[in-house]
Image (cartoon, rainbow, N blue to C red; front, side, top):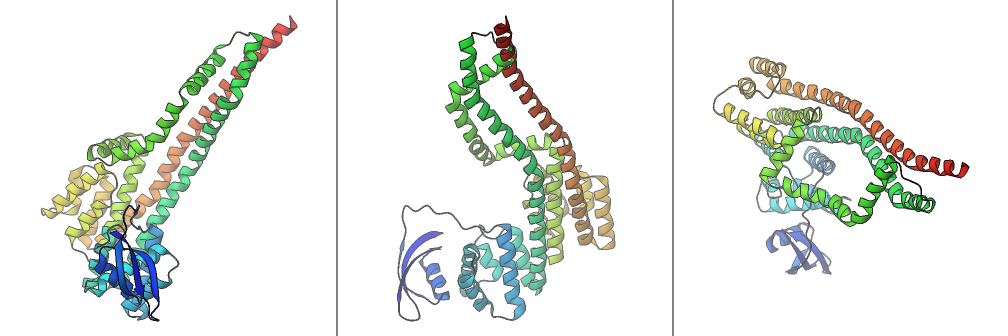
Length: 398
Protein backbone atom coordinates (compact mmCIF):
# COMPACT_ATOMS: atom_id res chain seq x y z
CA UNK A 1 0.00 0.00 0.00
CA UNK A 2 1.30 3.46 -0.97
CA UNK A 3 0.20 7.05 -0.56
CA UNK A 4 -0.50 9.00 -3.78
CA UNK A 5 -1.07 12.66 -4.67
CA UNK A 6 -3.33 12.84 -7.70
CA UNK A 7 -5.16 15.11 -10.12
CA UNK A 8 -8.44 13.91 -11.62
CA UNK A 9 -11.47 15.16 -13.58
CA UNK A 10 -15.02 14.76 -12.29
CA UNK A 11 -18.26 14.46 -14.27
CA UNK A 12 -18.42 18.26 -14.70
CA UNK A 13 -14.87 18.39 -16.16
CA UNK A 14 -13.58 20.04 -13.00
CA UNK A 15 -9.99 19.27 -12.02
CA UNK A 16 -9.76 17.83 -8.51
CA UNK A 17 -6.59 17.41 -6.47
CA UNK A 18 -6.38 14.96 -3.62
CA UNK A 19 -4.51 12.25 -1.75
CA UNK A 20 -5.39 8.56 -1.64
CA UNK A 21 -3.97 5.25 -0.46
CA UNK A 22 -3.74 2.50 -3.07
CA UNK A 23 -1.66 -0.55 -3.95
CA UNK A 24 -0.40 1.02 -7.20
CA UNK A 25 -1.48 3.47 -9.89
CA UNK A 26 -3.85 0.96 -11.51
CA UNK A 27 -5.52 0.38 -8.16
CA UNK A 28 -5.77 4.16 -7.63
CA UNK A 29 -7.29 4.61 -11.10
CA UNK A 30 -9.94 1.96 -10.35
CA UNK A 31 -10.77 3.52 -6.98
CA UNK A 32 -11.19 6.97 -8.51
CA UNK A 33 -13.22 5.61 -11.43
CA UNK A 34 -15.60 3.97 -8.96
CA UNK A 35 -16.10 7.43 -7.43
CA UNK A 36 -16.85 9.05 -10.80
CA UNK A 37 -13.37 10.50 -11.36
CA UNK A 38 -10.90 10.09 -14.24
CA UNK A 39 -7.25 10.03 -13.21
CA UNK A 40 -4.98 12.56 -14.93
CA UNK A 41 -1.77 12.34 -12.94
CA UNK A 42 -0.53 10.50 -9.89
CA UNK A 43 2.70 10.77 -7.95
CA UNK A 44 3.72 8.56 -5.07
CA UNK A 45 4.35 10.55 -1.91
CA UNK A 46 7.78 10.31 -0.29
CA UNK A 47 8.77 10.61 3.33
CA UNK A 48 5.20 10.24 4.52
CA UNK A 49 4.24 8.49 7.70
CA UNK A 50 1.80 5.83 6.55
CA UNK A 51 -0.44 3.94 8.86
CA UNK A 52 -2.48 1.12 7.40
CA UNK A 53 -6.21 1.61 7.83
CA UNK A 54 -7.71 -0.78 10.33
CA UNK A 55 -11.26 -1.70 11.22
CA UNK A 56 -12.13 -2.08 14.88
CA UNK A 57 -14.63 -4.74 15.93
CA UNK A 58 -17.37 -2.09 15.97
CA UNK A 59 -16.35 -0.84 12.50
CA UNK A 60 -16.43 -4.42 11.23
CA UNK A 61 -19.94 -4.92 12.65
CA UNK A 62 -21.17 -1.75 10.95
CA UNK A 63 -19.47 -2.67 7.65
CA UNK A 64 -20.99 -6.16 7.78
CA UNK A 65 -24.44 -4.72 8.53
CA UNK A 66 -24.23 -2.34 5.57
CA UNK A 67 -22.93 -5.08 3.26
CA UNK A 68 -25.74 -7.39 4.36
CA UNK A 69 -28.25 -4.58 3.84
CA UNK A 70 -27.02 -4.09 0.27
CA UNK A 71 -27.31 -7.81 -0.50
CA UNK A 72 -30.73 -8.28 1.13
CA UNK A 73 -32.31 -5.12 -0.32
CA UNK A 74 -31.60 -6.03 -3.93
CA UNK A 75 -29.36 -3.01 -4.56
CA UNK A 76 -26.60 -3.86 -7.08
CA UNK A 77 -23.46 -4.69 -5.14
CA UNK A 78 -21.17 -2.29 -7.02
CA UNK A 79 -23.64 0.57 -6.67
CA UNK A 80 -24.15 -0.15 -2.98
CA UNK A 81 -20.42 -0.23 -2.26
CA UNK A 82 -19.96 3.00 -4.19
CA UNK A 83 -22.62 4.69 -2.07
CA UNK A 84 -21.03 3.29 1.09
CA UNK A 85 -17.64 4.65 0.01
CA UNK A 86 -19.02 8.11 -0.75
CA UNK A 87 -21.63 8.57 1.97
CA UNK A 88 -20.31 6.73 5.02
CA UNK A 89 -19.39 9.13 7.84
CA UNK A 90 -16.82 6.60 9.05
CA UNK A 91 -13.68 7.11 6.97
CA UNK A 92 -12.35 3.60 7.70
CA UNK A 93 -15.59 1.96 6.51
CA UNK A 94 -15.62 4.19 3.42
CA UNK A 95 -12.03 3.21 2.66
CA UNK A 96 -12.81 -0.50 3.09
CA UNK A 97 -15.84 -0.23 0.77
CA UNK A 98 -13.75 1.61 -1.82
CA UNK A 99 -11.01 -1.01 -1.68
CA UNK A 100 -13.45 -3.91 -2.06
CA UNK A 101 -15.25 -2.17 -4.93
CA UNK A 102 -11.99 -1.65 -6.83
CA UNK A 103 -11.09 -5.34 -6.50
CA UNK A 104 -14.57 -6.49 -7.53
CA UNK A 105 -14.23 -4.40 -10.68
CA UNK A 106 -11.12 -6.40 -11.58
CA UNK A 107 -13.18 -9.61 -11.48
CA UNK A 108 -12.43 -10.91 -7.98
CA UNK A 109 -15.02 -12.37 -5.61
CA UNK A 110 -15.95 -10.62 -2.37
CA UNK A 111 -13.86 -12.98 -0.23
CA UNK A 112 -10.84 -12.78 -2.57
CA UNK A 113 -11.16 -8.98 -2.54
CA UNK A 114 -11.15 -8.98 1.26
CA UNK A 115 -8.14 -11.30 1.30
CA UNK A 116 -6.19 -8.51 -0.44
CA UNK A 117 -6.59 -6.41 2.73
CA UNK A 118 -5.74 -8.58 5.77
CA UNK A 119 -5.24 -5.44 7.87
CA UNK A 120 -8.95 -4.67 7.41
CA UNK A 121 -10.53 -8.13 7.45
CA UNK A 122 -9.40 -10.93 9.82
CA UNK A 123 -8.89 -14.43 8.47
CA UNK A 124 -12.00 -15.92 10.11
CA UNK A 125 -14.11 -13.17 8.49
CA UNK A 126 -12.71 -13.88 5.01
CA UNK A 127 -13.18 -17.64 5.48
CA UNK A 128 -16.83 -17.23 6.49
CA UNK A 129 -17.59 -14.91 3.58
CA UNK A 130 -15.99 -17.43 1.22
CA UNK A 131 -18.14 -20.20 2.71
CA UNK A 132 -21.24 -18.04 2.26
CA UNK A 133 -20.36 -17.43 -1.38
CA UNK A 134 -19.83 -21.14 -2.06
CA UNK A 135 -23.03 -22.21 -0.30
CA UNK A 136 -25.10 -19.34 -1.75
CA UNK A 137 -26.13 -18.35 1.77
CA UNK A 138 -24.02 -15.23 2.21
CA UNK A 139 -26.72 -13.17 3.91
CA UNK A 140 -27.19 -15.71 6.73
CA UNK A 141 -23.43 -16.07 7.12
CA UNK A 142 -23.08 -12.29 7.48
CA UNK A 143 -25.72 -12.38 10.20
CA UNK A 144 -23.67 -15.05 12.00
CA UNK A 145 -20.55 -12.90 11.59
CA UNK A 146 -22.33 -9.92 13.15
CA UNK A 147 -23.51 -12.04 16.07
CA UNK A 148 -19.95 -13.30 16.62
CA UNK A 149 -18.43 -9.82 16.46
CA UNK A 150 -21.04 -8.42 18.85
CA UNK A 151 -20.27 -11.27 21.26
CA UNK A 152 -16.57 -10.44 21.01
CA UNK A 153 -17.23 -6.73 21.66
CA UNK A 154 -19.36 -7.56 24.71
CA UNK A 155 -16.71 -9.93 26.08
CA UNK A 156 -13.97 -7.29 25.75
CA UNK A 157 -16.23 -4.66 27.32
CA UNK A 158 -16.99 -6.91 30.30
CA UNK A 159 -13.29 -7.60 30.88
CA UNK A 160 -12.37 -3.90 30.63
CA UNK A 161 -15.20 -2.95 33.00
CA UNK A 162 -14.01 -5.50 35.53
CA UNK A 163 -10.44 -4.16 35.32
CA UNK A 164 -11.50 -0.51 35.63
CA UNK A 165 -11.80 -0.43 39.45
CA UNK A 166 -8.33 -1.83 40.27
CA UNK A 167 -6.79 0.39 37.59
CA UNK A 168 -8.41 3.52 39.03
CA UNK A 169 -7.41 2.66 42.59
CA UNK A 170 -3.80 1.89 41.68
CA UNK A 171 -3.58 5.10 39.65
CA UNK A 172 -4.91 7.07 42.64
CA UNK A 173 -2.30 5.41 44.88
CA UNK A 174 0.48 6.33 42.43
CA UNK A 175 -0.70 9.95 42.28
CA UNK A 176 -0.90 10.13 46.09
CA UNK A 177 2.63 8.77 46.45
CA UNK A 178 3.93 11.25 43.86
CA UNK A 179 2.30 14.22 45.66
CA UNK A 180 3.68 13.12 49.04
CA UNK A 181 7.19 12.50 47.81
CA UNK A 182 7.53 15.48 45.47
CA UNK A 183 5.71 18.30 47.27
CA UNK A 184 5.07 17.50 50.94
CA UNK A 185 8.00 15.40 52.12
CA UNK A 186 10.82 17.80 51.12
CA UNK A 187 9.19 20.68 53.04
CA UNK A 188 8.59 18.47 56.05
CA UNK A 189 12.20 17.31 56.05
CA UNK A 190 13.36 20.93 56.05
CA UNK A 191 11.29 21.56 59.18
CA UNK A 192 12.77 18.50 60.90
CA UNK A 193 16.27 19.62 59.97
CA UNK A 194 15.67 23.04 61.53
CA UNK A 195 14.55 21.43 64.80
CA UNK A 196 17.39 18.88 64.69
CA UNK A 197 15.08 16.02 65.60
CA UNK A 198 16.24 12.42 65.45
CA UNK A 199 14.32 10.53 62.77
CA UNK A 200 12.30 7.42 63.70
CA UNK A 201 12.47 4.32 61.50
CA UNK A 202 9.28 5.02 59.42
CA UNK A 203 10.55 8.51 58.61
CA UNK A 204 13.99 7.15 57.68
CA UNK A 205 12.34 4.69 55.31
CA UNK A 206 10.33 7.46 53.67
CA UNK A 207 13.40 9.71 53.50
CA UNK A 208 15.38 6.90 51.85
CA UNK A 209 12.64 6.37 49.24
CA UNK A 210 12.36 10.11 48.58
CA UNK A 211 16.15 10.32 48.21
CA UNK A 212 16.19 7.54 45.61
CA UNK A 213 13.33 9.11 43.66
CA UNK A 214 14.86 12.59 43.86
CA UNK A 215 18.32 11.41 42.85
CA UNK A 216 17.35 8.99 40.11
CA UNK A 217 13.97 10.26 38.92
CA UNK A 218 15.05 10.57 35.25
CA UNK A 219 16.12 6.92 35.19
CA UNK A 220 13.00 5.81 37.08
CA UNK A 221 10.76 7.78 34.69
CA UNK A 222 12.61 6.42 31.67
CA UNK A 223 12.29 2.89 33.05
CA UNK A 224 8.53 3.24 33.59
CA UNK A 225 8.01 4.69 30.11
CA UNK A 226 10.17 2.02 28.45
CA UNK A 227 8.44 -0.96 30.09
CA UNK A 228 5.51 -1.10 27.60
CA UNK A 229 7.91 -0.74 24.65
CA UNK A 230 10.23 -3.45 25.98
CA UNK A 231 7.28 -5.79 26.52
CA UNK A 232 6.00 -5.05 23.01
CA UNK A 233 9.43 -5.82 21.50
CA UNK A 234 9.69 -9.04 23.52
CA UNK A 235 6.14 -10.01 22.57
CA UNK A 236 7.08 -9.48 18.93
CA UNK A 237 9.58 -12.36 19.11
CA UNK A 238 8.43 -15.98 19.24
CA UNK A 239 10.58 -16.81 22.27
CA UNK A 240 9.63 -13.67 24.19
CA UNK A 241 5.95 -14.14 23.46
CA UNK A 242 6.03 -17.73 24.65
CA UNK A 243 7.80 -16.75 27.87
CA UNK A 244 5.26 -13.98 28.58
CA UNK A 245 2.28 -16.19 27.70
CA UNK A 246 3.61 -18.99 29.92
CA UNK A 247 4.11 -16.52 32.77
CA UNK A 248 0.51 -15.30 32.54
CA UNK A 249 -0.83 -18.86 32.58
CA UNK A 250 1.11 -19.66 35.76
CA UNK A 251 -0.36 -16.76 37.75
CA UNK A 252 -2.98 -18.22 40.14
CA UNK A 253 -6.57 -17.49 39.05
CA UNK A 254 -5.39 -15.02 36.39
CA UNK A 255 -3.98 -17.92 34.38
CA UNK A 256 -7.35 -19.67 34.71
CA UNK A 257 -9.06 -16.53 33.37
CA UNK A 258 -6.68 -16.34 30.40
CA UNK A 259 -7.32 -20.00 29.63
CA UNK A 260 -11.11 -19.59 29.75
CA UNK A 261 -11.04 -16.46 27.59
CA UNK A 262 -9.02 -18.23 24.90
CA UNK A 263 -11.09 -21.41 25.07
CA UNK A 264 -14.29 -19.42 24.74
CA UNK A 265 -12.92 -17.55 21.72
CA UNK A 266 -11.85 -20.83 20.08
CA UNK A 267 -15.14 -22.69 20.55
CA UNK A 268 -17.29 -19.68 19.59
CA UNK A 269 -15.28 -19.29 16.37
CA UNK A 270 -15.45 -23.05 15.74
CA UNK A 271 -19.25 -23.10 16.07
CA UNK A 272 -19.72 -20.05 13.87
CA UNK A 273 -17.46 -21.43 11.13
CA UNK A 274 -19.05 -24.89 11.39
CA UNK A 275 -22.51 -23.42 10.82
CA UNK A 276 -21.26 -21.46 7.80
CA UNK A 277 -20.41 -24.70 6.00
CA UNK A 278 -16.62 -24.56 5.91
CA UNK A 279 -14.63 -27.79 5.68
CA UNK A 280 -13.17 -29.16 8.90
CA UNK A 281 -9.59 -28.38 7.85
CA UNK A 282 -10.26 -24.65 7.55
CA UNK A 283 -12.52 -24.59 10.63
CA UNK A 284 -9.79 -26.05 12.84
CA UNK A 285 -7.03 -23.90 11.35
CA UNK A 286 -8.90 -20.58 11.56
CA UNK A 287 -10.27 -21.35 15.05
CA UNK A 288 -6.75 -22.05 16.29
CA UNK A 289 -5.47 -18.84 14.71
CA UNK A 290 -7.86 -16.65 16.74
CA UNK A 291 -6.38 -17.92 20.03
CA UNK A 292 -4.11 -15.18 21.38
CA UNK A 293 -2.04 -17.15 23.89
CA UNK A 294 0.66 -19.13 22.05
CA UNK A 295 0.83 -21.91 24.66
CA UNK A 296 -2.92 -22.54 24.44
CA UNK A 297 -2.80 -22.15 20.66
CA UNK A 298 -0.21 -24.95 20.49
CA UNK A 299 -2.61 -27.32 22.24
CA UNK A 300 -5.31 -26.49 19.68
CA UNK A 301 -2.87 -26.95 16.80
CA UNK A 302 -2.12 -30.43 18.17
CA UNK A 303 -5.86 -31.12 18.22
CA UNK A 304 -6.04 -29.91 14.61
CA UNK A 305 -3.23 -32.26 13.53
CA UNK A 306 -4.87 -35.20 15.31
CA UNK A 307 -8.30 -34.57 13.73
CA UNK A 308 -6.82 -34.13 10.25
CA UNK A 309 -4.95 -37.37 10.89
CA UNK A 310 -8.28 -39.18 11.27
CA UNK A 311 -9.05 -38.91 14.99
CA UNK A 312 -12.41 -37.81 16.38
CA UNK A 313 -12.48 -34.26 17.77
CA UNK A 314 -13.50 -35.53 21.21
CA UNK A 315 -10.61 -38.01 21.29
CA UNK A 316 -8.13 -35.35 20.16
CA UNK A 317 -9.35 -33.01 22.92
CA UNK A 318 -9.12 -35.80 25.53
CA UNK A 319 -5.62 -36.88 24.44
CA UNK A 320 -4.31 -33.31 24.67
CA UNK A 321 -4.98 -33.30 28.43
CA UNK A 322 -5.80 -29.60 28.22
CA UNK A 323 -9.58 -29.75 28.54
CA UNK A 324 -11.93 -30.79 31.36
CA UNK A 325 -13.71 -34.17 31.04
CA UNK A 326 -17.19 -32.54 30.97
CA UNK A 327 -16.26 -30.53 27.90
CA UNK A 328 -14.87 -33.59 26.13
CA UNK A 329 -18.02 -35.57 26.96
CA UNK A 330 -20.21 -32.79 25.54
CA UNK A 331 -18.23 -32.81 22.28
CA UNK A 332 -18.48 -36.61 22.11
CA UNK A 333 -22.27 -36.47 22.51
CA UNK A 334 -22.46 -33.73 19.87
CA UNK A 335 -20.54 -35.93 17.42
CA UNK A 336 -22.77 -38.92 18.08
CA UNK A 337 -26.03 -36.95 17.74
CA UNK A 338 -24.95 -34.81 14.77
CA UNK A 339 -25.38 -31.56 16.74
CA UNK A 340 -21.72 -30.62 17.06
CA UNK A 341 -22.25 -26.95 16.16
CA UNK A 342 -24.90 -26.44 18.87
CA UNK A 343 -22.81 -28.40 21.38
CA UNK A 344 -19.71 -26.32 20.70
CA UNK A 345 -21.80 -23.15 20.99
CA UNK A 346 -23.11 -24.31 24.38
CA UNK A 347 -19.52 -24.95 25.52
CA UNK A 348 -18.67 -21.35 24.62
CA UNK A 349 -21.74 -20.20 26.57
CA UNK A 350 -20.52 -22.18 29.58
CA UNK A 351 -17.16 -20.43 29.41
CA UNK A 352 -18.91 -17.07 29.02
CA UNK A 353 -20.76 -17.70 32.29
CA UNK A 354 -17.61 -18.88 34.06
CA UNK A 355 -15.47 -15.91 32.96
CA UNK A 356 -17.31 -13.32 35.14
CA UNK A 357 -17.21 -15.74 38.09
CA UNK A 358 -13.44 -16.16 37.70
CA UNK A 359 -13.01 -12.38 37.51
CA UNK A 360 -15.03 -12.03 40.73
CA UNK A 361 -12.71 -14.54 42.42
CA UNK A 362 -9.68 -12.55 41.28
CA UNK A 363 -11.10 -9.26 42.55
CA UNK A 364 -12.14 -10.92 45.82
CA UNK A 365 -8.41 -11.43 46.39
CA UNK A 366 -7.16 -8.25 44.71
CA UNK A 367 -9.43 -5.85 46.61
CA UNK A 368 -8.12 -6.82 50.08
CA UNK A 369 -4.57 -6.57 48.75
CA UNK A 370 -5.31 -3.06 47.49
CA UNK A 371 -6.82 -2.14 50.87
CA UNK A 372 -3.74 -3.53 52.66
CA UNK A 373 -1.49 -1.57 50.28
CA UNK A 374 -3.41 1.64 50.92
CA UNK A 375 -3.51 0.98 54.66
CA UNK A 376 0.23 0.33 54.77
CA UNK A 377 0.94 3.48 52.80
CA UNK A 378 -1.29 5.57 55.06
CA UNK A 379 0.24 4.02 58.20
CA UNK A 380 3.79 4.65 56.96
CA UNK A 381 2.94 8.23 56.01
CA UNK A 382 1.16 9.00 59.30
CA UNK A 383 3.96 7.46 61.36
CA UNK A 384 6.61 9.31 59.33
CA UNK A 385 4.91 12.65 59.95
CA UNK A 386 3.55 12.33 63.46
CA UNK A 387 6.38 10.54 65.27
CA UNK A 388 8.86 13.37 64.58
CA UNK A 389 6.16 15.93 65.47
CA UNK A 390 5.60 14.10 68.75
CA UNK A 391 9.32 14.39 69.50
CA UNK A 392 9.31 18.10 68.64
CA UNK A 393 6.30 18.77 70.89
CA UNK A 394 7.89 16.72 73.72
CA UNK A 395 11.09 18.72 73.39
CA UNK A 396 9.20 22.03 73.56
CA UNK A 397 7.38 20.98 76.75
CA UNK A 398 10.64 20.19 78.47
